[in-house]
Length: 423
Length: 139
Image (tube, rainbow over all chains, first blue to last red; front, top):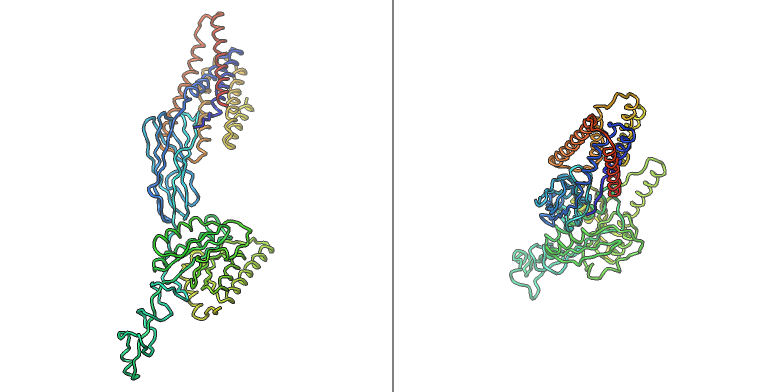
């Protein structure tokens, strides 16, 4: 530990010396009387000088939590040779808030370990490493202090809270594996699709006897099979707009988590593409493990400034399986992501753009030029939306505070009237 | 005298306002100088109030230092505050006692002579030496 001595110890010694010398020189006892308490204080400063050995251990009651939950951090302090009291401080990221005082000062007698509880409220998702602790030991009068760090960093992952989604977007085409999504194609399934004339190879149990009796020949029922779908969450991490801890990237991660959770619950395969300064992807898979993989990957995504021109060509082919539904979460701020998404559409992917609106986070200044720039920016965004819609891609706006169900319903409504043209 | 006391007060306020702990000693020294000036103007022998003034100056310095420490929002346990208050009280009372003892002993006729004068001078030299050592350690 590094020792610091308060400048007043030396100052008191200096005052005492001046008082004594002046008292002797002027033969005034009052000056010596004035100097006496300061001499005593300086002496106390010298006596209180020691070398405390304080150790601290930091532990968390768990390493994973959800937003708005509390995590209990426990600090165990021991001092082989103590100081009168110890101030300890656990540096926290802005996403975590200490419920108990942090920093705090506690008594720490030598040889008596102390256990301190520090409840932490997880206010926002993220992957963090808590620690080490900053310690400052002090003597009784605060003449000397000893500062140092202790405790190993503890990992903590805070997962975003999942929004309840009543309905999910069905893809235009399903995959070949069994799932919960009623396919548009016909085959073995439960949902009735149509009747057709019997053909060799059709099973007797599929004969529709009413239709057959009415038409005088054998007719069989056809069903829609239940198939799984492939969903790729495309996260645009080229740029974001942020105000404090709130921002478009934060909203996009929340939406992606909710969508991944819900689609995987439905036994679909879900993949992730984080497209921006740092490119990362997860191949589509199903199951709980995939959900954890996606959420862990989302926690590590960040908006990184880059000037590299990137296209979807650099993604491995299996990342974007054919017939997959691509749900793009983008603030529509960067032309490179817009180009990549339009490229995906041109390749025949079933693309839906959920625009994570940055408008709420932008407040233009009052001057005319700023207002003009703001209006031009809004118009350019509108123009980009029109480009998507001309390509048959539904673009829906999602703002903070609005349930995610609303834009999903908007997409469903869009698809009723507009169908992407086949390439 | 009033001017000196005012300067001391201003220095103290500046210390508290700006958080310059180094200035605290100068504020106390100026306060002490103001008191010393009154002694030389109104000379009536040994002033019995000197221990109280000394203890008050020390208390002022310590409370100012405490308030500067309290600028950092550290949630201190009641026991910690109590311990520091007790230590501060003990220091001030001990300082007052030492100062009063000095004033009281000044009234005792010890006979004077070369030996006591030499002893006094040696004590002063020792005090200055200790001060220098403490200054060096403090840096």
